[in-house]
Structures are given as C-alpha cells and as structure tokens.
Image 1 (cartoon, one colour):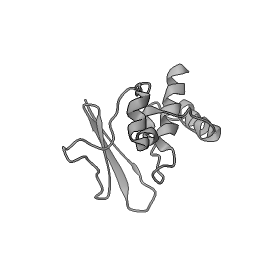
Image 2 (image 1 turned 135 degrees about the horizontal axis):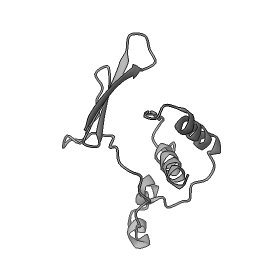
Image 3 (image 1 turned 45 degrees about the horizontal axis):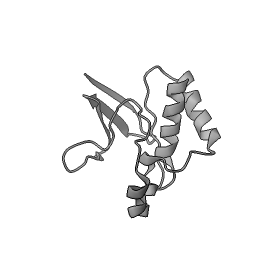
Amino acid sequence: MSTAATGDAGSAGSGQTVRAEGGFAYGVIGADLHVFGDGTPLCVLENWRPPPHADARWLSELPSRMLNARYAVVDFTGRDDEVDELAGWRDEGPRLGVRWLHGPGGAGKTRLVAEFAARSVAD
C-alpha cells in the first residue's frame, strides 16, 4: 500500500510530502530525508506495543541503558496537558492525519507518544 500527502510545512513556498510504503513513511521538507545507513527510514509506522521486558542486571551493566525510552524504566508522570492536546487532535481532527513532534534530545518525545499510544489503545 502506498499513500502520499502534501501539506503546509509552515513557511511560504515550502511544503511537506509524506509517502508511506509497506509501513515505512518517508517525510521530506525541502531536501531533508532521514534514513538509517541500511536504507531503513527513521520513522516506522506500526501498531503500538508495550515496552519490552529488560533484565535489571543487563540494564545496570550500562546505566545509560536505563535512559532508553523503549524500556520505560521509570513510570510516565505529568505532561497531562500535552496528552490531552494529543487526544483532542486524535478525536476531533481528520480520520487520517500525521502529527510531527519535535524537540531537543532527552525532552521526552518518545515517552510522551508512547503514553499517548497506550492511552489511545485503552480508549
């Protein structure tokens, strides 16, 4: 399955083109397209899954592993306003839509969307 959409990227004369094929979405603004070295795109569309179990001994071997959002070592707290805003977008927006979240590394983007996805599945 392949879909393509073009939308306003926020500045005059620029637009974003998003193409999804086989569960991988490619979004381009101007000339920026991010992919991994093996050609896998940076963003993958897939159903939400709960965090994998990570052995405590394995995590403590390298404490930086505990910072990896995929393991959700610390429970999600706060950010209710952001989760509510995302729920409003989900419930009141178009049936098919994409929302781009951006911010500096370590700001909690991954944990925020994981929490939103978990709540969306529960809803």
